[in-house]
Length: 252
Image 1 (tube, rainbow, N blue to C red):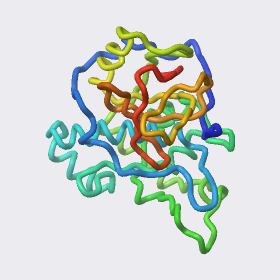
Image 2: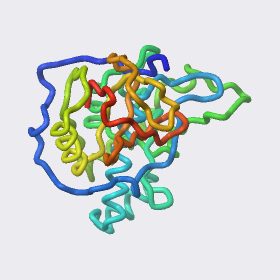
Image 3: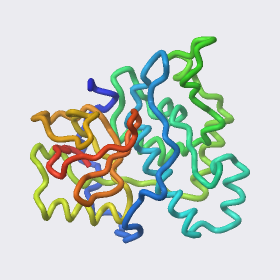
Image 4: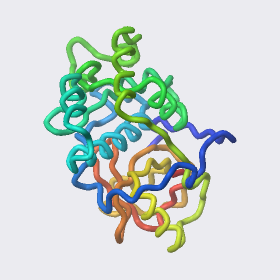
């Protein structure tokens, strides 16, 4: 698979794991996975894998908080009225965040997407949707990335009245397989939140995805469980993938 929208950038100001307070929340995020959404349409690819994977993570976390009664009832009512919760699941507009974070035809940086979410908020999917299967009239790249009305930008910030968003690095530019103790550490981090990864895409349609020698990240996705495999949630069909424990994942 070619690069689908990930641009890697190292910056000194990034937080490293351990900076944010650790919370042991969930031992399996499978029950809380978001609605499946692909990042491409019948005409074009959004190159927004960083946005899709980031929002999958946030939706999964908030679905967990919703299902386990960790969000006050008044907040649930207000968030539902605003359009953030549909059929007991959070649904945010990937199209909104892809535009707001400055996604280009080459993709985007992980940090730019998270910083956009942190400061600009998130918009309900229903307010700025992506008609992937629309053929007439043609909905193309310029339509997807058209300027967003100011009233929607203002509405997106309402989510910041309820939630704070932050990120930190677990591993950066690791070009070898993870050792057993490192896998255990990743499992520990998974109990706090699903993890965004940037990895190569080797044999990506196999039943179990094995490394192929590539170490350059070309795609961003979410891992949500680890046992004998690493379970990956993607923005391309098939959405759920099983990666070998020795798969090369340079960035987490």
